[in-house]
Image (cartoon, rainbow, N blue to C red; front, side, top):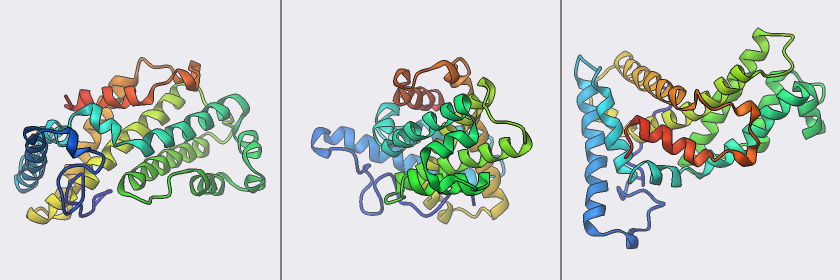
Length: 250
């Protein structure tokens, strides 16, 4: 069922507040609001899964980001996302500038005499988040999905050695989309337990969420030309926050 698994909330099974929140900085009213929003996420997910009409799925997004304290606080909990982007973006820029083989040869001797699948698997294991916590797992999933897309592009265009503006933006849009998708599906997984939905219904529900996230992220990133940007000029936290806000995070 996609990236979903049983997860009781942003902070795990024993508490509903996200782990990164300093509870001492919140009033009881603020804590209650976050807990209420998380309950709303799970309740609405279960209702949608149990209903024949799943087209009202968008209602979960404002509650989801509300459960994280808003879009800005969602970004604060996305540390592995930023770390992964800081690894992925220079790699893609180097491929654009120097070509596929030269880029990986410069990184390490381990990449020599390997095909593209072997190279990117080694890269993922060597440089990506280890998956020591749930957010790291999500970031790793997003990176691997992005690398799979890169492999596909290279296989479909055997003569490709450089990435143009369109391909680079498409790949990075995929990374941002897959991260948000994996975060949401991982954290709402416990809602499936309480629903009567079968596998096909769950897959359709996740497909709707995936497509909506991709549309929102694509709309937000379409004016950005990553190819011409210096890595130091990119505030990926701001980009992620804008995408979360477009999805319904206040």
